[in-house]
Image 1 (cartoon, rainbow, N blue to C red):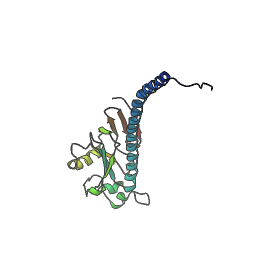
Image 2 (image 1 turned 135 degrees about the horizontal axis):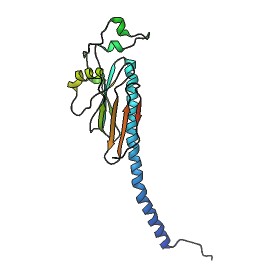
Image 3 (image 1 turned 90 degrees about the vertical axis):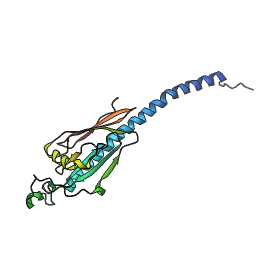
Image 4 (image 1 turned 120 degrees about the vertical axis):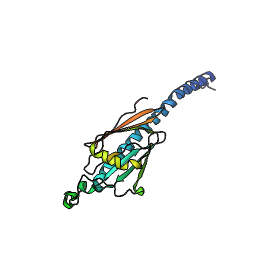
Length: 201
């Protein structure tokens, strides 16, 4: 009978020890990568929703608002109804309908606020809204004053999406205390949205 080559008990134990050490190093790194992906996914979700809101504002011919729940993981999107919406709405012929019916742009009166038209946007688990910075502009100030009574301390200032395709200029920071943060920037003139890489704490 020939002797077959085999592993000794010492070799097997040494192999298991090396595999255990590699696993102990690799598993936390895999967890961090998965967490980073959640942060990036949260930023991408917000980018998609902001792009959708910009297109919806142009289609509907009305101002849409996006507000973040500070230290929460939700955003709410809702329309702003006003008498001046007609000045920014386009009819099917491509001309401004507000100019045809003589509406004035100076009057900002809230007509109605439909609670069922509010959309709730939920971020991935463990991702929170750290801050929402919105650059003030003359036309946004009027809307903010009229909607101030609807806002509590937990909701940020509204990011506005206008029927002409422009938006508020805004910077949103999403974070996870263990993984880092991503910054989502919205450029007001063009409505372009960019998402940063995952940044350290």
